[in-house]
Length: 442
Image 1 (cartoon, rainbow, N blue to C red):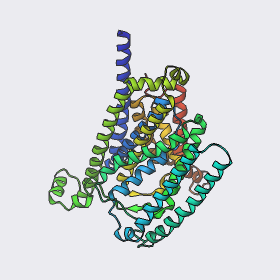
Image 2 (image 1 turned 90 degrees about the vertical axis):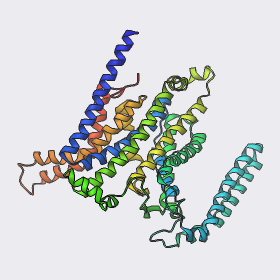
Image 3 (image 1 turned 180 degrees about the vertical axis):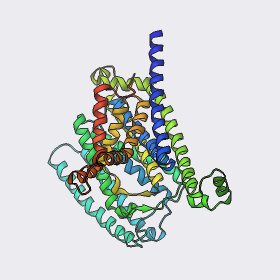
Image 4 (image 1 turned 120 degrees about the vertical axis):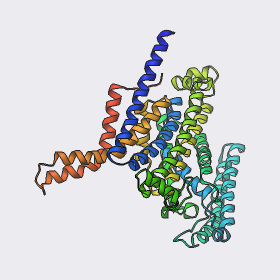
């Protein structure tokens, strides 16, 4: 027992040192560049840590290889528009009812097809009935849906051209984003979780691409690639702070101009909200992983056959953890869109950012919640800061070269690729010297 206590204390001390180093990196960023930059990186680090927690829950707890992360993040971002933007009355009058009826019709066709498949005996009759229902239902759905969409998108397309949202406080969109992502995960899980791990990865990536493609092309939903800008914010606007005489006087007393002070205060407010969410998630996930449920999930991950022999429903537990992890990713997506104050579907790049989140989990330590948080902060800091650091270093390296030199121009231009090179190097070094991550699972 005493040996275990010593190990635990040693691990705690190492973890504190690692997080202390991470805090020092943010402090150095603040002193060397600016506190605005440091806080901007820190806020996105908080969101990255939450994303890493969601993926860690799926991979670290259950061994599910999901590379459709950006699909769930996009659904969370969509929730902010649906919840917080004001409804466009003209668009609803022009085609809102038609869109609702079309969606109900589409859902009814799918439900009818599923019932036919289950109730009819296999054979030619079932195949013909399925074709009739699906083809006929598709044309009926399009006949109702398409004219309504055309009328909606014709309403002032330069600024609206979509239905809008519910006009509620945007902070309510965070749990809604998680719920929407959980619903999408349930649909995906019911169809794809029976697949082998490599096929599951391909399926989740493909479905993520479909989700993002729908968001880009269905303008009635969230303006597509025209983007939704001016989302409400849960924190004060910089202009409002700068217009306050009390705030300006306090900033002047501290020797800071009002513009800089206002941006720092807003970033601190965002950071406070995101920190509360992260700490609540950490507390809940730590409780879960140390509960009988958490021990069962690890047992299933380590040996599915043995767990099934002990009476555990492996498929149901996989679906459960897949939904929970995806809900966390949806929550992070809603928070990210809130921070940006705009929904830009074109920025959701599944392969690029999915790779980044997976690096966070692997480097931090899969199966360990604190490792996922550390990986989220560290990898995001590197992702943002490597390029300016690389430019500085390359400037020093090429300082003695003649202006106009082809080699000098090539070296300076190559700094744009420093990010991916650094991610690969960090991943290789960690896997070589700490294969289980910086904070491994105990």
